[in-house]
Length: 479
Ligand SMILES: Cc1ncc(COP(=O)(O)O)c(C=O)c1O
Image (cartoon, rainbow, N blue to C red):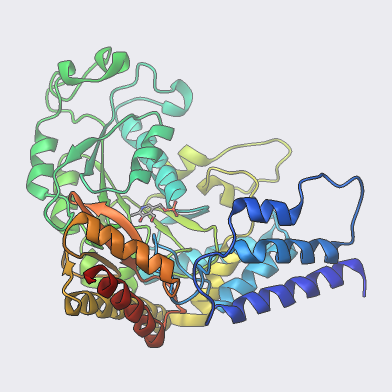
């Protein structure tokens, strides 16, 4: 056996041992950063080592510091597991090592990307002519789609941002709900658009359409503008009469705390009536559209102009994989496309025209694999299963005399157990117990215990033992 095969075999053995351990191992890591650094050693080696030995060292040094995120008992943040088909395809992606930027140079990946894009658009009920960029995650998907939005609303206002930049450009208004994910603000900051205008949300975290309409009808006057660029503006919608200011409205499918969905039908209608581009951040919630039972949550969202989601959340593809979807491919290509004389580019457009990177791995392979493995009904069952488990957690919280702070409409549950100190104590005890991982947070000015069900691996038995752990934590705080 040569060095390569020995290394791959060892990697397979370590991976299988890790995956086998997930059913029973505690979720939290046993070792901290310093322990892992000590086990790895810090001296840069003077010379080569056999690849298999390197794999062994990596696996044994890192093992204790691994968190069982792909286990069925991890409910922190919004963390999807890795479906076996997607995981195996991800291994092949690394072995094939295709730089997937160009249509004709890596035809296998382009073919898979084309097929996968069409499947995604069909599954999500989005316009079949849309463009899908395979990016690293929802933050980058928000950035990518909002770059298309920025370019297009400025183009309509007679400004070429790619050529002329933002200095002296008409001010782009961006309106977001009060409970949008912070990654939207980060994406806007990358784009030089500054802090957005914040529109009130209701008790579930859904944007208020009345407040959105009022804000759209009443743009800030130049004296409200922040910064010199804004003040130097040639025009706002007020002083230009009826011409609307370049405007982007960001809506949300899936609130990270409550799981709530914005009221897309009326919100999209109001935003479009005011000439705005509508973007939907649906990092985990977009896949509600793939379930006949939960599709009603996104009703009307197909009328938006762009959408961001993750394949590494609800779809259970390994990290890192997000999807930037734009209904009209032209603004996306205008924002992302590039040319290099040394590149063999295609008239039909290349994958690089849809993403911020030039070089990138073949991200469509694992997405294709999970969709091929699950099919339409399998994706729906996946989503329905997450929601069913979330409802079980909510019932358990109530049975433990906790308070569920919102309507449980999707995969998220936020709960409180009396005052903040006690809720935080419950979170700490659940984490110390190690059976399950549920993260703490603050929502509507209260400390909360958050449960996010996002892994294909979660079974009824996982939920039962996790509820048991929660019950022990709550009982201990009673004492
Ligand atoms: C609604 C929403 N948008 C964006 C993100 C950011 O996603 P990512 O971590 O993949 O960049 C998240 C993460 O949980 C989210 O819930």
